[in-house]
Length: 268
Image (cartoon, rainbow, N blue to C red):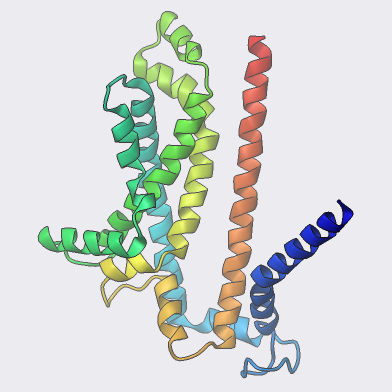
């Protein structure tokens, strides 16, 4: 039994080393004084300074932030309304509708990107920020829809029914009762969707125009000429932001669970 435990720990340590050693190397070399990514010659912040002086990179970052926030807002509205609608219908085709709603997560990105490109081309839409926004919204909606749907499944429907019995209209009952209860799920799904939007390359390449560049696409095109310390600095900052988003996502999840326990205790 002890041998199996030691072997399991050794295997787990090996997996963690293989997963996080490349990340650690990128972080270390982002502070490298030398431009050559083969040896560490000294600690320096010059590549972070170069990064913030790169206007093209900063413009791509602004485009990605605007795109991520806008697509998450649209996805939050569509995903929340879709999850509430699916929870209230009693059709025989409900299972099929739920399956269709998560198809963008199951379809490979390259296929989804080609489909969106062909669809926008048939509509004669000019490729740019609008097509990027629509494309990112398509694959962001399922993240929020699944989070909200799971939250609604664990929520007591009698709470909204009680509000309606007291004279509240359907919209008022949803706004005052249901929406505050599902808001942690909406926020956590939106944060996850934002992270996926900021990370997307494949779909953005298919629905983008040469005049508009997002940060992941900009990094991808620069990597073709070789990895520079500036890219390492950018990856380090993106990693820090991603970790922060994940921590906020975890915190919101804990708050949501705490509210569930509180309401369960009150009901008892």
